[in-house]
Image 1 (cartoon, rainbow, N blue to C red):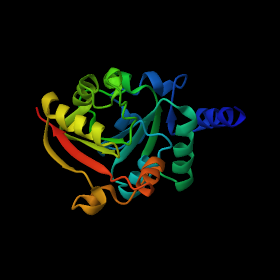
Image 2 (cartoon, rainbow, N blue to C red; image 1 turned 90 degrees about the horizontal axis):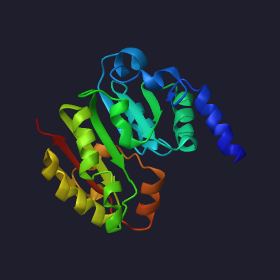
Image 3 (cartoon, helix red, strand yellow; image 1 turned 90 degrees about the vertical axis):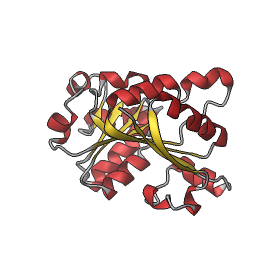
Image 4 (tube, rainbow, N blue to C red; image 1 turned 60 degrees about the horizontal axis):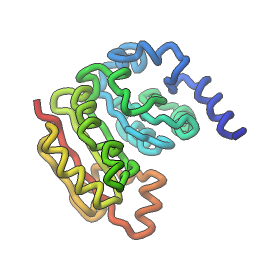
Length: 218
């Protein structure tokens, strides 16, 4: 508990964390480029970012893009926030919020790309509405993504991956490109070798990594 409280305090004091109680929490919608990043670069979200390994890794690789890690868990976000600060990365922010409420923080067409990396697959049938590729979530993504905006997904779970492949075309996403074995495919260079904690764990256990990318159709 003491460690969590310490991390919560870090978040409160960190300029790259936006959370309830801070001024930007209620005013940032539609203003990420002008108010926070102060540039006109593309915006990339990592949803359920956890400790932010992917957010920080991508930000280091693409200094000409803005990256926002979104997660409801403050103690996790603190890890990524502190890593970004230590690296001196000015193209990184973390938003502590529930993904269900993305429309409270992003205007229509404000986002260029979304990454979903190793989300909870919610395997039981009664959990379907909680999957991050369930139609209600896809509707949110479609709203905030710009024209030709892209969605990326990485997972070790074959059932969740199959589910996602089936629902995406039915919900306004097109041009699916995918592989069931990322590290042995021509798409491998897309992820730049960046691995989250869970990706490393599952890969070391012998699971193949599934990946897809798709774009919205207007």
